[in-house]
Image (tube, rainbow, N blue to C red; front, side):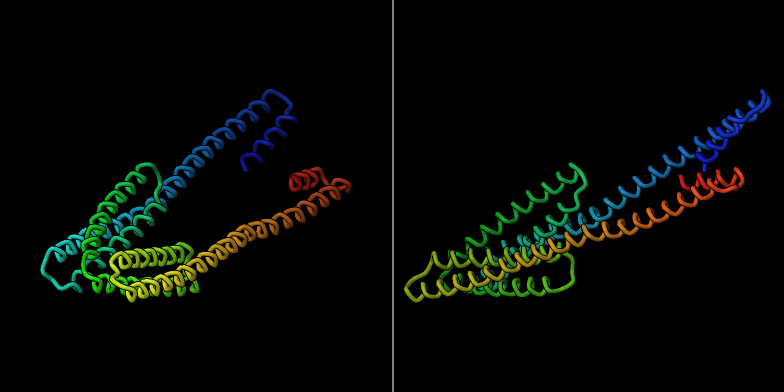
Length: 303
């Protein structure tokens, strides 16, 4: 609107007759400049508001996930401390196994929370916070590994129980990953489910290795071989899930690229049609006996 005002002033200036007319033109120019100053201030204010909204939008996910990660850390610390206490007590082997497994699960949950926090970090300061959590996770995992080592030192049946538990966990994790992949949840959730199945299957593999290290005879060797076959079958399923997820992500990427193009193509086609129509109308008006004001309006519309 202010640009249109400027063009009108230019047109007025082009037909001024004397000094008095020049004063009027100057007054209009001053009014135009005043309006332009106000518009610039509005643009600056809008840019500031947009930036404030952007910063707020980035901060919200970080703060929410930071609270979850802090909670996961507290839980992991508590569970690992409890497992240490149980391992140093006279509790039954089943109780010790349960306590150590709980610490592993708490660490895994903490690890997932850290990964989620890392995905929403905003700057170097946030990255430093994530690194601090990773250091704490490493400490917890070291403690948990020490607890697992103590269990491995137990008889064959102790490790057999752990291996069966790991198999159940891995099998359930793969079943869950299959279910999540077939659902309508978002890709990060699907990726997390597959990653959880990979971690569970890796834990199962480590349990098999520990069992193999303390086998006593040929029968125990057959048991270890059976576990290895089950681990491989789960690994095959996980690989298939990863391939399927990658294909789905690629299909979504292609679809996401197509949608904006098609939408803007429609708008551009419409703009072309409008421009052709208006320019044709301006040509017709210019070739007619219409008044100068009508011709001016038609040409301005075509512009």
